Image (cartoon, rainbow, N blue to C red):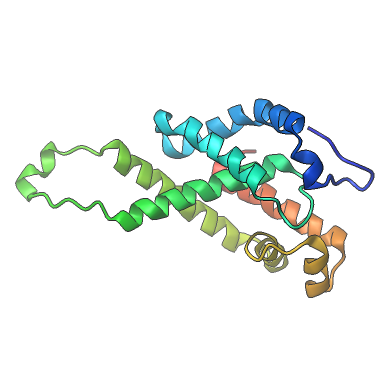
Amino acid sequence: MSHDDDDGTCQFAERRSDRFIDRLFRTEAPRLARFIRRSIKQPDDVHDLVQETFVNFVAGAPKSSVRNPEAYLTTIARRLLWGRAKRREAQGNVQHVSVDDADELSIGPEQEWMMEASDVIRRYEQALAELPARTREVFRLSRQEDLAYEEIAERLGITKRMVKYHLRKALIYLDRRVNGND
């Protein structure tokens, strides 16, 4: 899905057009549904999370242009899954069971989802730690501090092109390590 202008970027405002969002939804919703389904294995929630991902995409206009909306959507979905896992963890649905009754218990869907979400978070944090220091710093400045490419380049004393290189390298590596996509 290439909707790029001369320098390879497209302003977010242009991408927010109804036609673009519709086309993006038609092409990316199935991929996001598969990604989310692999992460939670709760079919009832998959489509809600896909829709919530697109709502956040449309509502959250970043400071700079979105070069790769597919990767941006995946990041939004991953953050939704992470936030959901944290909320459930904070709720602390702890049940005490006697040792005698423990054999009768099975792992319910909620527990299975929590284990899978924790595993995704663990793989993400491990993959992030494995990135080279410069690549990790570029990724952190872009995703956590929400800095534009120009601001990152200035702060680190590198070119805008190198910022794009490191960010792309980080996204590809994290996707492969977390999702097992090759």
